[in-house]
Image 1 (cartoon, rainbow, N blue to C red):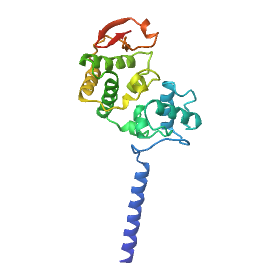
Image 2: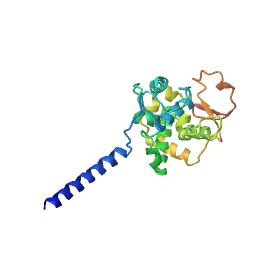
Image 3: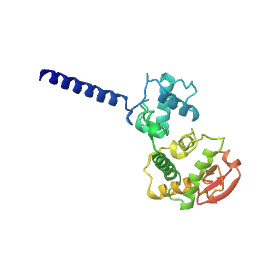
Length: 228
């Protein structure tokens, strides 16, 4: 009897050790990177920040002073808590899951829904109150930029490129989009482009950039002019 008890104790200990090991090795959505972190997720954060003009250091996977300052600047400009920690909300704003391995397991469906939500937030911040076709047109401009070699090649990259959209600068990107904005995002993602390939839009009544007035306007929808 004592021998069987010893075997059972050993078996239980082995099972407990296996469970602990599995939990330790399983990535979670809550994983964060911060000062002192190293690895692939840090490198991806650095690449995003370089792409958008917040960081000009090496994408070496080491989270040091320069990376910290770039993260804080990104957070300040995008209405996030400026703590220098790339947690769930900051990672989502960068178009990155929080925890590097999560990206590999994300399904195409969930990726599509993340794109819908981010694009809807941009449309809501930039074009709510515009005619519906104008809302879709704003989403189409984002997607046209993704396809252009002159811009970042992801939706998040285009939207969060430094200085690209007023809604990001003033924090309206963080407002909860309504269903009309989500529907406009889906229509744009599904291929509707009312602009015919435009890469820019602006409100002629409020635009302050002299450069934007040099672009060729192709059409006007609501308060926005769409240009190439």
